[in-house]
Length: 261
Image 1 (cartoon, rainbow, N blue to C red):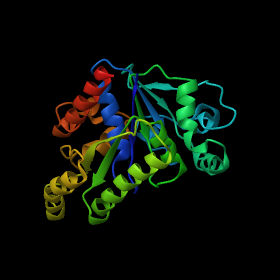
Image 2: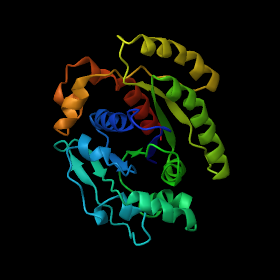
Image 3: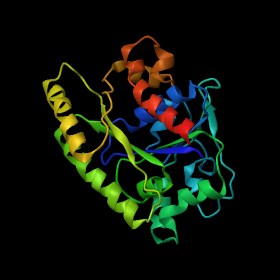
């Protein structure tokens, strides 16, 4: 049984795609096959993976359409790394509107993965920046959830709301088992910014109150931007850069879950 990890946040620019890409690369480096599914109409994964825009019939928009018959289109990235991507498309937003009125619309992605399963050990679902039908689809399809948190008041305050949304939505969708939140991931941390240090110090108490694991922070670094300019993860761009190790603990837990399953 594969692990399906939904990367959720209730705001944009919090590092969902950065986390998705670098976690995929880290896990694949340990010999596992990873699929990245891009549910974000902004198509951030195209940039991070060095991909050109794809025809709509080769994207997640087609996977969620009524015409899908199992012909997944996944593109291998990073020189046979073991990572493949099903790209996003702007029309995914239009598909989301159709899912609202479609029978079992909330379960479309879960149904696709059940009827037309992918052979990968890990599926990472990169979600949109807003909570809506696409995010509900990700939750319904996921076995676990991972939440990146930007070190700003609004993002931290919204973390409790997001946890409550996950619990309530899983209950309403009657998901069994309910996908647990694997952890919070502080993102874009800059130790030179006093506000970042202050909020990072507060997060352990918040995570403990919510009974959510808190992972080490992913630092802010221009090397992430430099790497994405070439469509590769920082581990390939600058292997010895300290930020290349920021995903090690999360990847270790994910690998343990894959092996357990």
